Length: 269
Image 1 (cartoon, rainbow, N blue to C red):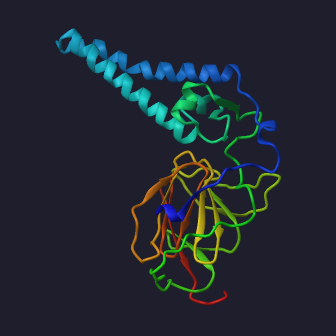
Image 2 (cartoon, one colour):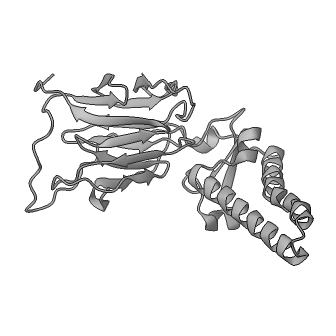
Image 3 (tube, helix red, strand yellow):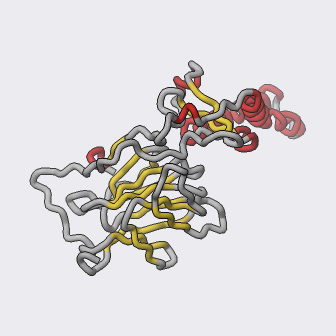
């Protein structure tokens, strides 16, 4: 996506989210302990490497490198989704105390975070965009918008050929539900592999695009969309809360499923 087609909007529910998020307390510390123990698992290969008559120094070097790789992967997962194996097991999500989005590395280091208890409180990422005025994709002087596939209502075409109309703001996921203060349409996408989150993304139809927002999906959301000049840009991952414009012909990946954004051939349909 181009910068002009991308916007980062703060996410917030109707009420103050901090009043609905319950601190995880001891379970947050236990979740970190589980992740630390998981990162230490590669040390178990030292005896195995020693059994191969590999020099002891090399065995420990390889094991330490593996520990660093696992720790880095855990850190990436926390900064991308606010989750990790330990946090998933104990029902905890870590978010920035300033934005309630997955924290940056610096925020983790300074402990400017909130460890939310998902078992008794609200998930900070189960939010809706603040504000009702839709954002418009930027226009480029001298560029011409190519003729769209159709001029009617927006359609979401699943990889099995099923067509789903998108007439209003719509939550898409394995089994989406509205929060008490939400009134979105709901589209359930079958997913036997469970790669799609229960509430995976928010779609908002506009005049010449569909706005796509990742709502904090575990396996993330990818999107590629034709640019205003008619070319197709490189597919990219969305950060939780990131909102991008997907034009007709664009492709959205939710987990293992692929969805194509198009329009009907019936104007005003």
